[in-house]
Image (tube, rainbow, N blue to C red; front, side, top):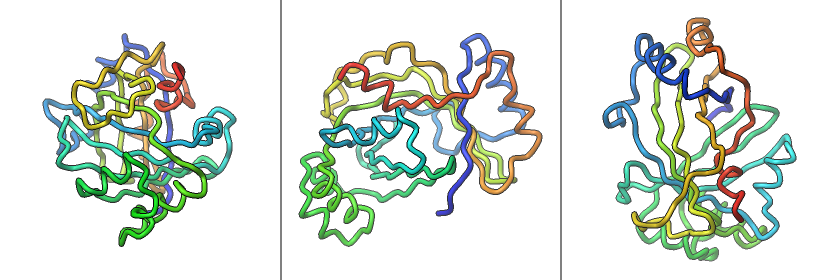
Length: 223
């Protein structure tokens, strides 16, 4: 997958309804939504020195992070994802996990992952050994996703961001999460080579301002 452009903006709750209504006129909802949205649960990995967290806070130009993720509480389809960022461009790589592979990730079975036939799992296994990557914290949130074919544009509204504190009980639906302190509503806009002007106009609301907000960083404030 090629690198894509990405904008992140913080939006006030008072503008959410208007922004949602505008987007629904021009864009179509992602096919995987339920009543226009879905829930996301992610488990982020980091090392003892908090490499991914520190690089985000310090604004390191070239950085990456690994996470495992499922949607709408459905643990039958779990993905390993690696998100890379270079000079403001982003790329996401994914690999579907079997139940056994999920357990290997959760228990940091580095040797087994490094022997996988899936390149992304092999990379994670090596980095578990070399960098000491381990599961760090759960991040939950609700997402409203919209797509627009010209430019391969994806617009998302993310809110109700919750942290699992230091819990890594990723597969337990009753695992305690609490609201991440002061977490805003986040509007994300991603596109390939061009962003249609109609989309630029649609996402303009009075309260909007550019943000470097990170859900992972917000959910690590408690440890």
